[in-house]
Image (tube, rainbow, N blue to C red):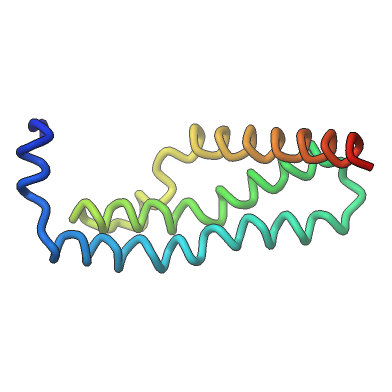
Length: 115
């Protein structure tokens, strides 16, 4: 719903904040290490940094998008329907692949420059 900033601010309660925290904190504690674990596992392959980043982005999105969508739907108070847990897969996987590629590319360039 659309409202002014002051209207939105006035709707904030401790209960809303604590419910949001209890939804987001555990999923963030799961999501962020998963990307790094996938990255470390792929570092033992012969894939170049850029390709490793692409695979990492695809795997991360495919594994974690249901968790992200669950968290979002729960925080919004919407119905949690398993059929919607991969909602927005194409734009999200594209973003994660671009991030993984860029991180792999820049990481490789930095390692070469600093070696």
